[in-house]
Length: 521
Image (cartoon, rainbow, N blue to C red):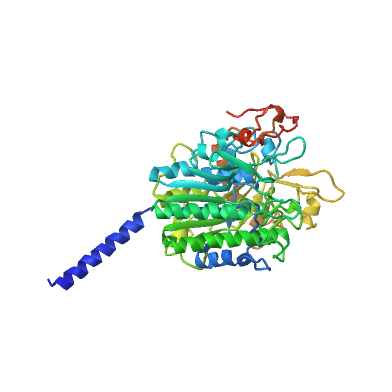
């Protein structure tokens, strides 16, 4: 054998072996979670202003998932579901203070993420991942519940929403942390101007994320970045460069800055030549908050209602998966999928077996993402408020077992208001039970949930016959976790954020609430 042929064979073997090593290496994982961003806020999903060029390009280079859902129409429960792979009713992020009550604000959180839960960064440590969260945590504000106690190695951001909690004087007490050290507050050191909406916080979050990516790339270290910016949560904010630039007002300014930031993250991956070894997923925690008003809320596209509701506008989210060389560019997949799937999918990509000592609600989407198959098409989507199963989707059909509206008759007639949200001249809301005869919609023909099927029709009976066993099986096997979001007497709680003494930023405790404390275990 000639030296040239031998050299060629050696090169071929080395290239093949190198490729196997690359394929065997776990990818970096980046989850980009927006706050109250609606399905209809992306140009690729029909937003007329077309002000998301980077997200639209991300979809063109990856996979768009139009049937992607959150696990709850509110911030805290949906984030708990993402990081545990479990419905909030299982992991404890719900309330028993009232029927189907959407408890979620920091004032209502007695506890935090349970120590019994195993979060995604804790699992990824098994393969040596370094993990960082940038932005909003919202899984408990007291020291024992913060990110570094739950598997994350680094954190820059806030433990809760930037509109609360408030002290007795009405001033927001929102700490910002760099790892375990409090470094300031939103409305003081980090200069969120509630009148103009100007703040550089998104730019700070962007730089934190980019610095983390560069450091791990230089060290050739597998990493998990959970980038959870909150600029589109009312009161919305943007830096001076973007203020007044959108056709959509201040909310649009925030979307434009987030789109720019996500573009910077993807371009940095390319500049570091690690785009082919990095799985990136973009989505939102829940639908656009329509109650925030026209200048501070997004668009849920063709879907009914928004945040806080279990109609499509509250729980169907924009979603894009991006991984050059692994996820086929320009694909659209209509697989029914859920934010909890990111837990199981990330573990699968990392080569880690999921926990076998608990029920997981997330499914492995790698066959869908990497092979564009729809092998999981028949999986159900559960819609919860609190600990109440409100609705279920199976295939194209969605059955509502509970709705809330001022008048079900008016709702059926298409009156132009969102059930469960404020209506001028009406002060009370009615919860309506449909247990025996649920409202069923065909979401393919009727994505806006305007025309319920006739209960006398053959189509209704056929859909119900397939949905009912799924609901019965789910309820029979469900083991609810201990509620973490029950209202409590706030005066007895320790509200002082860790490290506030050093900065002299410990504000007064909030006023008492009428609720009796029900301390979680």
